Image (tube, rainbow, N blue to C red; front, side, top):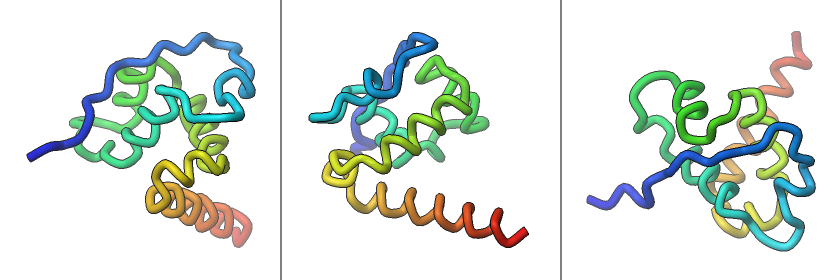
Length: 101
């Protein structure tokens, strides 16, 4: 059974500007790794935040900031439409729930 590509830790320099983190023309290797992780994060033992720290060497807060930018990009939608649509839908549901409070 093939579980897809294995994820390697990604080093991110603090203070990277988002336009450098996300080139306008295509997805970086880190972008693809983030999408792959979102597809299969439940396979990792322990908390998701711990796996984020170990695999991407960044805080969960920064990871979610980058993920939210990433799922708004057309390249991400083209790369994995079902995942990106699901993540967008989940984000919209969370926003609606917060607004209802």
